[in-house]
Image (tube, rainbow, N blue to C red; front, side, top):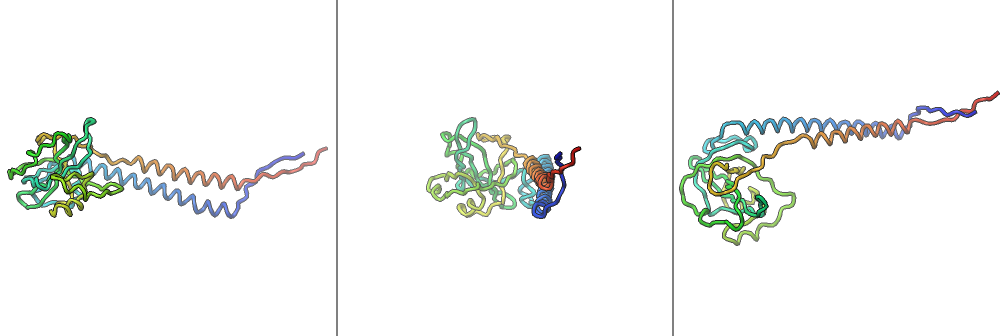
Length: 243
């Protein structure tokens, strides 16, 4: 009579692989959980900034990274001859532009870019871009524009009366305008009026991506352990005497 039994016998190569991979995958999972916690802390900090009183850009300012999402108020006059249009921006299915104009602050003499809002491509009015020299008060929220993954050549957009760019980066704007600007941009509030559409999205910092990655890494560690256990179990047959 033949019977089968399972024996646990460790093999060198699978064990070495398991000892390397399982802690590595667990470490990566823990790292992703730590990144998720950092994102939660960052998100709470940014949301708290939105609730703070408006900060005056005419006063001494902290670092730009500490100003992201802060509500601000600024007084100055527009430098309309340095206005640019950010093209292919959509609103309610229509194509138009974001109008970006530098504001020369009246007290500290610094210059900040103001995204004044959206206007349809067939409603661009040259008169609204004429520099009246009047002092204006601007309310808004601070953001830092990020370049796309693939940067396009914008040199051919500078020959028109008002440059039309596919996107905005602060470095490119400074090189084109020759202005020394603050390292952020202000999304102007809809309460300021002026005929522009200002419906700004409010990006939120999410930890879900890092949680998903952590689950994947822990799953890989579990799979590695299960494969090692399966390779360490061997079936042996025993023959018994019959009477």
